[in-house]
Amino acid sequence: MLAHVIGKKSKPVKNVVERGAVKKFAESIGDLHPIFTCEETGKQSMYNNNIAPPTFPRVFDYGTIEELELPAKGLIHGEETFHYERPLIVGEEINCYAEVKDYYERKGKSGEMGFLLLKRYGEDLEGNLIFTEEQVVIITEAVRKEMMV
Image (cartoon, rainbow, N blue to C red):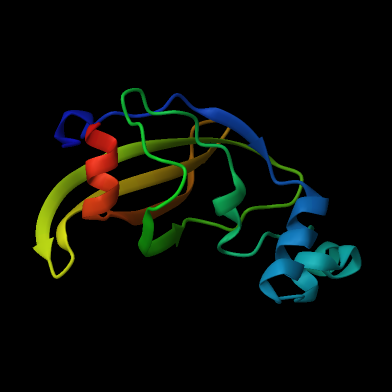
């Protein structure tokens, strides 16, 4: 169903690791570690600034992958992993983009399900990789039928 989008990427989108957004994100996940929220702690750290929580890239804009049209609701969030080369520093600008790595289908108890594997990238403005995020989006049979209409 989505095999035609495997390998397609979005165009990079510039994002900012904004202090207020990092603080709100840390509060929302219940992790108020001072390295995320206290400016003085950030200044005294090895980074000379605050850093973002590891799952913070969920809030970034990764652009649109042409021909990948998914419904706004009804999808199941499967596995998700992050890999970092270094932390995200508060105030820095980064470019983010996404790629469809794979798509396959399997028969389950509730019918035919689709598994969409996405990989997201965050790079500094010089093109150096900061992080990757891999996620699996599960598309149930009911959602698949809706998408085919």
